[in-house]
Length: 456
Image (cartoon, rainbow, N blue to C red; front, top):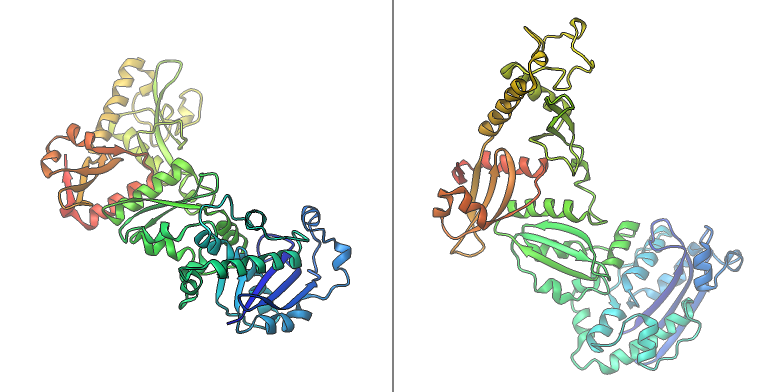
């Protein structure tokens, strides 16, 4: 079995949109070097100054170097039918595969990552970067941050890994299409293997322990693995793979609870790689406030974190429709509900919403009783109900509570007797911040499964 140990220098961190400036390939049989290839490459784009400082490769150095298309056939010939090895293999492989494909060659090699191998064969070392490994394992690393120097250092490291592989770690990783090869280099495979195949929410963390992505799953283990099932060369995927260092999860009894917890947690933490639910933010709310004359006023406004709306709406039109219904039903003033913008009521401002004596001419206390009656009507007619389903264990039930039309929270109850008292029920549940997305999820589920609903 032959190995191709590869190192590249590039113009950026992801293959789609960046070029290779240098490539080195060491052909190895597991014990010694059989062949060595190295060349500068003209990336056809300017090399950023900080990369020039890091690698020492300048624009002038690559100006007369061959383009990758010119060396692609030779690179492909060296890599074909060999195990592709690199330190953080997914990075190097994504670049080489992408640029070979652009030149008309299809690379499909088994891979080995010397970061992952080192963590298994030499556990408990103080760091697994190439520099730290070479220092701890007494490997001479010359010409650091150049393709040739780093490739040769990786070759020496691989020889040590082969020599100390008492439990056949390398053979295990090469068996079949080992899915571990797609994992981020710093993510222990045990964290995925130990995840249950049940509904829940999972969290990805970076090296500093900060949450960078939150997702939901019907099957936690399968869903998490799917994030690493390919090696897409775009920037987002490559940055994501590089940033993931740790995973945790919270098990849920049902897929609906996983949906809800995911949405609540995303809005609590706003991880950098979560983008899908940002579109749900521009919702509107019915607000109640008192003006300087003592009148309680109603308004439909964009929902802000520091507002506590009586009720929320998906659109401004939906909110205004509700407001017009309240005006007609309870004799409220359209101007005091902010549907007429005049500073004072006048004949010119009268619309179909204004009929009879102006409510704003009343004493504030009398008018405010009408507003309070409208708010009480809303609370009375907005549904309060619980969705009861299976629990995580057989001796419990899961419960999702909607209170006065808004999501309250969810959790687990020991038996259905708890449902007889809403105050007692709330003590068993974890309050969570709701939003239109969660409310719509619960309403949709309640409509589809009315037998799970318990009204209060």
